[in-house]
Structure formats: C-alpha cells, structure tokens
Length: 304
Length: 248
Ligand SMILES: Nc1ncnc2c1ncn2[C@@H]1O[C@H](COP(=O)(O)OP(=O)(O)O)[C@@H](O)[C@H]1O
Ligand SMILES: [Mg+2]
Image (cartoon, rainbow over all chains, first blue to last red; front, top):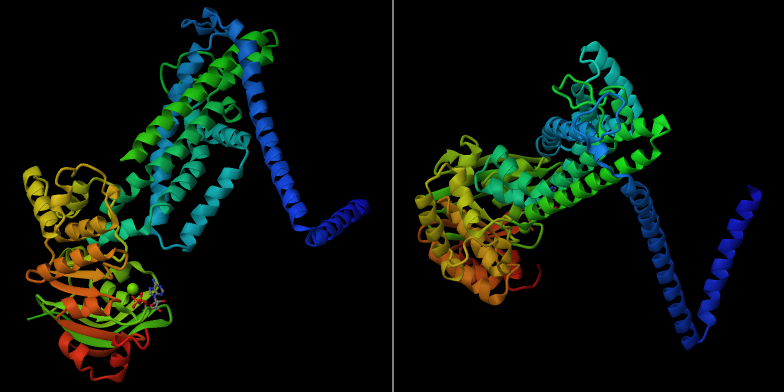
C-alpha cells in the first residue's frame, strides 16, 4: 500500500518536473515532441479500438466456426419430444415472450415517463419516489426477479410455470429501462416545441401526443431495442417462471423455454456441445437482425 | 377601442420581482412597441398576456388583465391562447411539414375538413408573405427553410388560428436585414386586422412601425405614449437617454 502511494507520488513529481523541463526546450524540439506525443496517443487509441474489435470479432468467429458446421435440420424440427435438441419451439417461445413483454412494459413504462416528465412538477416527492424505485429495480440481479416471479406470479397468483408468468416477470424487469430511456427521450425534446404548441392553444394532451411523443420516438425506440435484447438474452429469471419445457406453447399458460434457456439446457446435458454452438449461431443472428430492423425503423422515424 | 387593459400588475419569479405595478392599455388595431434594456421584463409582460407564464412553476402574477373587458383568468386558457397568438424570438417551427405546421393550430381547434384546412393554410401563408416561396413544397419539412422563412412560417402558424392579438417577442432579432424588413412590413400590414404588441431592441424599428411605445426599466413602465411623442418629445429623461442610445 505504502509502496503504491510512493510510486504514485513519484509519478506526480516526475510529471511536473518533465512539464517544467518542457518550458526550457527550444521551440523546434518542443514542437517535434508534441507531435510525437500526438502520434503516440493516436496509436494508443487505435490499439485499444483494435483490441475491442478483435475481441468482438473473435467471439463471433468462434461461435460461427464452432456452430455453423453443426447446423442440421434436426435442430429445426417442428415436431419435438421432451429432451429433444430442436430449437424451433424455443424460437417461437422467444418471439412470443418478446411480443408480450413489449406489449406490457412499453405502454406502461412510456406513460409513466410521460407522467413524470410532462405532468409532475420537477423535483416533487412523488417523482423522486418513483424515480428512485425505478433505479433500485434496475440494479436488482435478474435471478432475484426470477425468485419474485416464482413466488408471486407462479405460486401466489397460481399461474404456474408459464409463458405468462415469465412475461410478467420480464415486464417488471424491463420497466425501469423503458421509463429511463423514455424520460431521457422526452427531456431531449426542446422546450420551444412545447411553447409553440401551447401558444397555439393546444392542451397538454395534444401537445404530448402530437408534438412531444413523435419527437421522442427515436429515443424511445432505442430503449425498446435494449429491452428486446435483454429479454432474448435472459435466462435466470425465466428458468423459475416460464420453466424449461421444450414445446411450442399452445396458450399463454403453457410452460416453454426461450432460446437462451434452451441453450443453457443443452449445454448442461454435456453431450450436446455442438448443438449448443449451433443454437448460439441462431441466437446471434436473431440479436443482430433485431438490431438491424430496429435501426431501420428508428431511422425512418427520425427522417420526418 | 381598448383591447388589453392592464392594472397594477406585479409579477414574481420566486422571490424576485420582474414587473412592478404595471398599468397601461393597448388599443385594438394598433402596433404597440415595448422597448427597454434586457431583463427589464418585456418578455415577462408578453407571456403574462397569453398566460404562458402559467407554465413557469415559480411564477406568480397579481393585478388585473382584461381582454375586451373580461379578465383573462375567467377565460379558458386554451381559448385565450387561440385569441392571443404569439411569435417567439427564435423561430420555432415544429419538425414536420410546412403544411402541418400551419395546420396544427386549426386542427387543434377542431377543423378537420381537408378543403377548409387547405384554404386556411394558403390564406395564412399569403398573409405572412410566404406563400410565393413555399407553395410548391408544402409537404417538405419546415426545418429546411431559412431563418427568415421559418419566422414568417411561425407568423403564418399563429395567424392560422385567426387570433385577435399577436404578441411578437423580438421577432427579428435572429434575422438578417432583408428578412427583418419583410417581417416589419408584414407587421404593419397585419395591424389592419390584428392588434399587435411587439418587443424590440431596435429603436428604428419601434419608431418605424409602431403607433404606441411603452418604455420599461427594471420592471416598471417609465413612459407610455404615442410613438411620435415618446421618440420626439419624451417626458422622462431616462426615456430620452435610452432612445438616444446613452444606455441600454
Ligand atoms: N422563467 C424565469 N424564471 C425566473 N426568472 C425569470 C424567468 N424569466 C425571466 N426571469 C427574470 O425576470 C426578469 C425579466 O426578464 P424578461 O421578461 O425576460 O426581460 P426582457 O424580455 O425584458 O429581457 C429578469 O430578471 C429575468 O432574470
Ligand atoms: Mg426578452
């Protein structure tokens, strides 16, 4: 500890000495030195950027190279028995799950945010309360949501292991994210638009729906994209609520595993490593295409 | 005929007083210019007239303001703002098409017929002397217009709800001289049909276009009278000092 402090102090002293020395250097030398440091730090940022890209590239390459050779029709079989390796039912469940979660959490979170930003006085105790609640919710590990969902939706409300239990749990989990991003999006809409609308005799409701929300859409979309990614990537909370049965759910009260849970099940069997990688390829493609689609939608919204 | 009548208006932002015991009245179909150094409360007065100050949480207003003899606090606020339009210092068109910008107000007040909207938009744009420049691109975004065009669009937007009064808060301060000239001409043209209250930092502008001038200093009305009298024969020496450019 002491040695670390000494090292730090030494570094500081050295820094100042060098800085002082700089002032005594002749002009051309100084200029060359500055140019050197410029180049040095530029190379450094390049290096770090390269490391990041390489890491990402490596992961993607690893998944693709280990997974693609094992993609087989068996993995997409529509008719499955328990314990099968087909991911088709899991894809259906995932899509279903995403749709339900968004249908619940987006309107709820969006209108909460509208209420907080547009209707409440800034800094009122109620706003502070809801905001801190959302912040605390955002920091809770997903497995805790899983336990809550298990006790409340599955047991207390008697929904059992089901798509519905899972979706409700995930919706609560997504609320803070939706609220936060919508709030930011609303705040980024310039006040001059609000003034312009009010000055024409438009009421609050019209101003919110015709002026503010349309302009906040790209930001809200960003939040929705993140939420979709989180739902697709979630496993812990769903194992306790939606369950792990491999089947195409015939109703919202059926248990079903999503793609991520499916991957976890496969990998835990031990003998399905190749199938796990193949599933990961599909998961990767799903996430990437989701991003692309939402990007296109967001761009279309910003254009008008 | 008196359009707006103000009696003993005090306006506070929190504990800070922005207007002190302001009383004067505004004649219909005239241009009233509000002049005075920055921070003397001109914008505050304008925003009190269409109750935009209601949106400022810390703002408190006492005194009597009447529109056609009726207290503005007895009117529905949205209806008041329909009757009393406002043009802001910085042009603030909505990020939508030129047509939708102008049609926003009429639509707000319940006009749905496409034909009527077309007529209203065209008339408002003509009145704002913008029709010739934009008639072939009504569907394009309003943000693509120049600053001067944007400001005239905002005027058209305000006119489209057929207000009785138009409040203009330094409408030309962000504009080039040519656009400024256009907006000035426009204001004079519009004063035949509308009552106009305009805040300006430009003495020549006030002298050129207004019928009455009110001089503010530190939240108080120092002098109110016909523009000719205020500029050629000010009663108060502070007024004289300000308009001759000795401070401000
Ligand atoms: N929203 C506000 N909150 C607090 N104080 C304000 C607000 N708007 C204006 N003021 C204060 O009121 C005074 C008058 O401002 P304003 O009416 O904008 O003056 P002017 O338009 O003549 O430059 C200033 O001292 C200003 O700081
Ligand atoms: Mg002002």
